[in-house]
Each structure stands twice: as structure tokens, then as C-alpha cells.
Length: 172
Image (cartoon, rainbow, N blue to C red; front, top):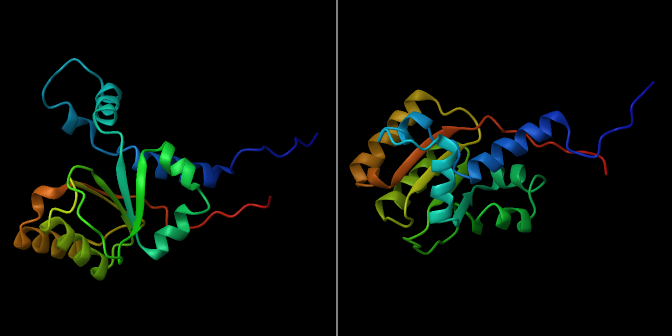
């Protein structure tokens, strides 16, 4: 017997959606880093406390990663994930120093230069960097040099490769 198709997203799309929502929840921070204090709370409890303290964040993306997010999450779904504002990386952006920013971009030299400039200007409370693909070691080293030389290192909270550089389309 053939089972009817499921109503939910496909396995690949579900995995991509999970990676993006975890990224937006700031869930990709290493649990070991969060447990250094030796307190009795679990990783999940600490993440919930972090979200409760400031549930809002900005999403900054490039045109390529916008095409990844658009079929996955509507504006209302972004809001339910705590994204109050979503902006293109190449647009003119005003400082919002009391809100963290989630950068979801391709790891290009141009994008990394813009991010380093944002960090040096302290545009946001902290920057969580998520790349759609693997960032090559020489590119990462150059970015690190740039961030240190411009004085923006303290703004960088985390750096992650997401491996979600594809668009899942489904028939409706």
C-alpha cells in the first residue's frame, strides 16, 4: 500500500527549516561555553533565560540568503522567532545598540568587510555570524585580522557555518 503524502515539509526542507530557526533562536552557541560558570542549569534553560532577557533580534542577510529564507519563513513566522526587523546587508542601516543582530550571509570578502565595519561601529549589541556555506580558513583569518584591526572584536558573539546554501521548493 502506498501511503499518502505528508502535509509537512520534506525531510530536506525540514532540516533546513530547523537549522534556520535554531540560528534565529541563537541556539548554535556551544553548550560548553555557556556552562563555564558551573551553575546547575542546563543548556536549554540557559538558552531560554537568554531569550527571555531579550527575545528580540535583527536579521541581516544578503540577497542570496534572502532567497533561502523567503520560501522557509513568512514575515509573521520571523516575528514569532523574535525577528523584529530584517534588513539587507548592503542597505543603509541605523545603529540599534541594545538589540543583537543575526547575520545570515554568504562568506564573501565584500560581506565580511561590511560586517567588520558594522562591528567596529558597534551598530548592534552583539553580532551572531551565520554563513550559508563553509567559510574557508584563509578568508576567516583575514576577517579576524580585519575585525581586530578595526576594534570590532568585542561585538562578535559567535561564528557558525550553516550548510544551508540551497532552496527547497515544493509543489502546493
